[in-house]
Image (cartoon, rainbow, N blue to C red; front, side, top):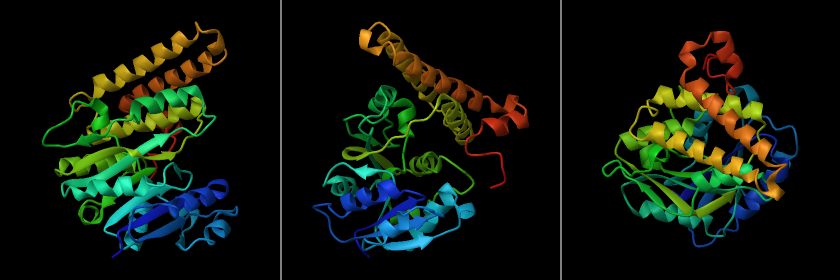
Length: 306
């Protein structure tokens, strides 16, 4: 077994995969690791670029891709005692990114770790505000035996930049009944089983998307649906802390309107925050909606057959 297996899922990541792999192979302070790339039907030069690096490449058909099932497939390919998940469009922001992730597993009670995400240069201010709230600069150890007062962040976990102890994953694989937000679902099961999850701010990557307001409504509809399905929404502190954070973000953005350099920016930021809130509330209350509308609102088609 090598120290860790780095699993990267790709589809048309031509502009990103080269810098991503260069950063991975520039890591310092770590032992032997392997890199496994699972591609689901790229039609650009993703595979051509990736093949220039000493990695194992596996290909699946686009219709075979499934967030949970494909991650389990990728994890099964490796031999490392730690399974590292890295998105193909994420760029490690430090030469010690991998070491900082792995060092947390010196604690035998730690089952999973996830690192910081930084918005890519040029990302909208709204994205920076959101990331500052979710991915701060303070380390968090989420211990079920001593539950942190972190509200909805207690269950937060992201496979964009994460690591799992293989011996734990073998008992708690990604739940394949969830079509999306499989990272949230596995985090719930990890914590319920008594394992700790660590948020490591010293293992950062650059990663961000710019969603339209319509896309945010659909994305947050699926988040609300998943929170309800997992029973997280009813957990202590989740509801109040999430609504409080959304409220603070909206208030901050409304305040920007008073600043001369923010007049043009604020309406878009406020609109995106309102879109998130609307999507979340619709997802949480989806049982009251007709199926035709729910199918239109779901970004990840959660109502289709798995």
